[in-house]
Length: 335
Image (tube, rainbow, N blue to C red; front, side, top):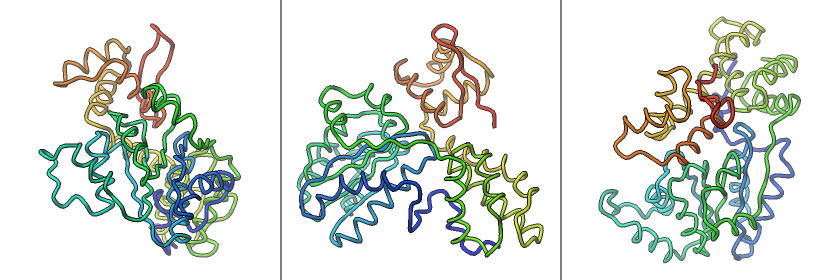
């Protein structure tokens, strides 16, 4: 039943992106000056998780590469590369300039100097989960480099704007800002149809079943693709030629758990500590959470940073923040 398992992975970049024509056009227009060997605009893609931001960014840059043969690009996940050093290192890695870099001893200024002196083809850098950067000064560093074009990706622009200084705020407000809304049921079902066409055998699943999956995913393409993948695997194990209702029912909780587990694995050490505190307490107030957190780490972040961490985990449905002000408390999200 499964012809190409790669197509059923959430990070697979398809040959076409459906229901995002306006967003593709906006990003393409922002990057278009590169085709004339001119500086391009910074683009900022924001919206809920599972709305195709990362996929569209990679798709559009890849299409740009087809138009402009001589171009470099690099994808940087700032949730994993959250420090200034790691971010710059990953960008240099895309240029093959890290072989002699020592993570413990090479100064950040030396890494920046390598980027400043880069004189190769246009370089497009996708900074995913950019609101996870511990030091947003790296964005200002990159803004000053005319040979690098940035595509920023985040859940909410408010979280990023709240953490940057006036120098960056003015630049972010004037860049190309592209908003992504959650997919509707029909849109998500059509996205799955394309995945089925590329990845499964003919007639492996019908439209009604895809709509059932889309409804369970509640607008999140990551979960929808996970349900489809797990349902197809379940049907294969049962020796079926088509995905049936039981396969979908079995796949729904597994897919949601997979997405949640993957998100937990990407948490920074401090975020993981906060998550574990909430998990152990079941329900906890912000004050109690911060006290428990500071007792477990050697160099605790500020209360403001911790609030940002909790907001991020709330967006990814890892924890739930309920109540306001003094009545606020945190608990783990239901799987």
